[in-house]
Length: 400
Figure (cartoon, rainbow, N blue to C red):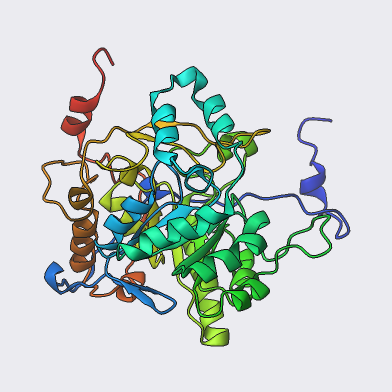
């Protein structure tokens, strides 16, 4: 080409029949954004961060994830008494073993090199259907909210068992769940039929990050949606599969779907940002972005009394062919009360999550979660480092 000669793009427009190139959207996580206080503030004592799922209203909008290192029947009861609820994994150890505690002890004692293979072996034991009702009864009889999780492939078989046992909330969860699924089955899982089977029992479904997928899920009649693909501390789906979306953008997009669905149908379906939240600031940003509640794993696993004994692993870790999780050590260095309500001496936001949320909402003049959804947010990647040179230098390893 002669210097100065115009290129094709400069000399003529692209023909209309040419394919359009793929483009990339910008997406944002918790560290990329900030909440902007407005012209009104509210006393945090007047803030009520309640959220409703089906016929249940919870004073604590923080749910414990359906992971065996996080939720046991006993821990579910404890969390219920704090105003929230915990989800028990019915595809996990509590329905495979009568003495699940003994297996959890072995997993916690394993070294790093053998932990995943040991977890895979432990989950090779078949689920005992009689234990499904037994675990639900253990929670109910102790005064807890019995919320359970099943994988989509087991939902049709397990759902009637949970209903008959008196379950309060049913969750259908996998790495990605959609209303439309292509498979070799003549009739795969149909969520509208599942909702009918469960009668008036709320059905929570996840996970998703996409507006259209969320709309289609909501139109099946479900009662709530879990939002997030791969953000959890113990999840490796993003590395193994390359799929996911940062949680703030995922929350914004699915919250938009919820609002469209509400405008169309009058049926409000709450969304729950699931995974990747560690601090009160993360919880506040998720709810400000549009979440009605959040689901967390690692922070609960770090509480004294959590079944993982200071360890935590994702639901896809036991997959025999392609594990998408890893056992992580979180240490049990707090209590359930301190995690949720304080008081605390920690300055990093990892305790008193409810207190932080109420203070954040009050600072922005929001008395309810719905009010907080209207609060302004901005893209602010320097929000955690601006002016923080002394904090950064205190936490920087020696020699750096």
